[in-house]
Image 1: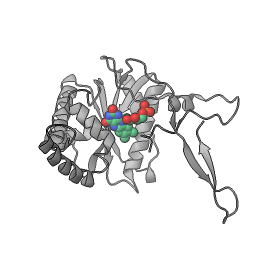
Image 2: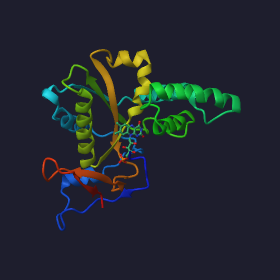
Image 3: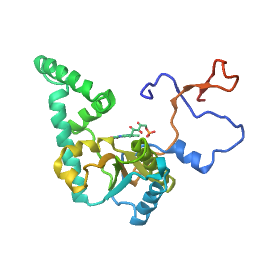
Image 4: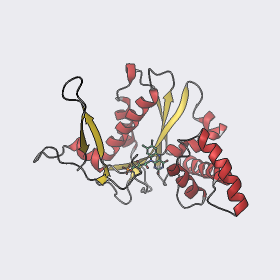
Length: 251
Ligand SMILES: Cc1cc2nc3c(=O)[nH]c(=O)nc-3n(C[C@H](O)[C@H](O)[C@H](O)COP(=O)(O)O)c2cc1C
């Protein structure tokens, strides 16, 4: 799990003297951008970003996606407002870190129950983020002037959610290669509790909202390398019955 900080290691060096190429540089220097300039990217830039999603690989070449671009300032403000309202609603019932002893006791039980049913959504990281949003300490969409919604077609082959992940990351890397910034916004799901948004975006079977990208010009410029958790990788490169060799991946 990359939330650990104890074994962070910098980018490894595997081919002495061989420079990182342009694609690798974008991969290693891309950061999630949480501050954007007000003016949006041009529509041409947004179309270029979308195009790299459209050309992504997908199981059976099913291309199980639909893209929705949101630039309307009124709509962005309404989505932010509704997401915050929903975060507050959830936190009222399950934020066991706040309030008096009796409230904490009750909310802790509710939180435990909710975490059992939604272990990923209420993992400690999004839990902390939700709490910050509910307290007005951070924004859901980070003030981005454009959102790209990634809508998944559930009829895709095998695992359409994987296809969407690949498709979204293609767009992310394209945006950063063009000098723009992005942040995945999984918390867009907060808005999907509202029938009005599901209706507006046509989110009903076979479509489900998978994720969202906040897109815009970086302010401040925040791309740059960071360390990551080292990985112990098993290499099976000897006989069929030999135990794997383990190797640390990471500088
Ligand atoms: C599927 C997915 C959903 C995410 N959702 C959010 C989100 O709702 N809000 C946010 O600020 N960051 C979100 N992030 C960004 C992660 O927090 C970020 O990728 C991680 O901390 C690593 O930092 P880096 O992207 O700068 O390398 C999301 C990332 C992914 C891949």
